[in-house]
Image (cartoon, rainbow, N blue to C red; front, top):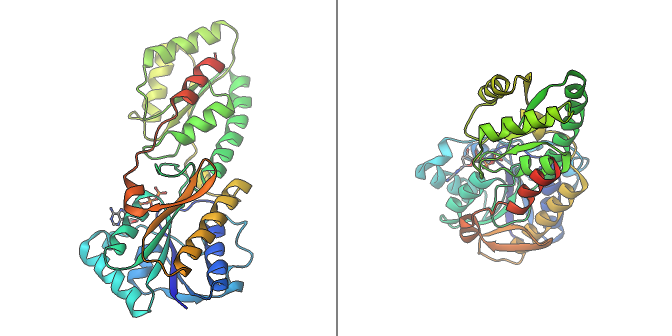
Length: 321
Ligand code: ATP
């Protein structure tokens, strides 16, 4: 049978373990040898490669993080590094590789595909910033964590009649802010995809206070072009309302994956193993579209820009008045 490798790369996300488990067990079932590569492309360059069996992925599905560990690799960003990484795989007789990670990791996979490796990209990132798939693995769990935080912050901001700016992750993608803002009942959501007007924001805060509202929850995506501290300073100055900042940061990356993230990870992992077991040499990006599992040409999938859901965004303004 074919020898394949699996690695996780870039920021970790809840559900990566479930994806690894699916790749390993479905891969072995299909008669392949599956090798785990530790620390992403960094570990690949160092030859941190060892064979996995069914039991080596036992009891990991429910855990956040990634038992293979992950890394960002500068060395791999060069043409020379990529050639070395491909050579390392060749040394181990591995010609198929499952890359679990975000946009950057998949671009790394594409560079290996150009050296003759068949690469299956599995979308593991909380950011939901890949254009070709409905959702990425970890996004649902991250949003659930933000919702939990919003609930707690609402209690304390009501008690003190404060405004609070909650900074969430997502890199250049506003989806974590959008989904948590809409389903968490935030008054305002600032995303990189939409310009924001400070005066309008402050006007809304003042009007809502006049109507008797005691708190204001403002969700701000990290990709918005103003620091949360500076925004808080300006809002406080313009509204006279005490304004605090909470940066959720790495809290959003940890924790037990939700059912949705485990399911997406499992479906993608099994699909990746099946496509490699069929002996194909086409590199693919795996995900879901309208809830159905899809596998697109890797290079084309990475060119797809993520559409921003304007309708959902506009609902926030309507519902949070
Ligand atoms: P997340 O956004 O969730 O952090 P990511 O996969 O986008 O995940 P990156 O840090 O962008 O995270 O990428 C992870 C690693 O993939 C990089 O450290 C680098 O080794 C490799 N990589 C990123 N971009 C490229 C590229 N264009 N070509 C080759 N390799 C890349």
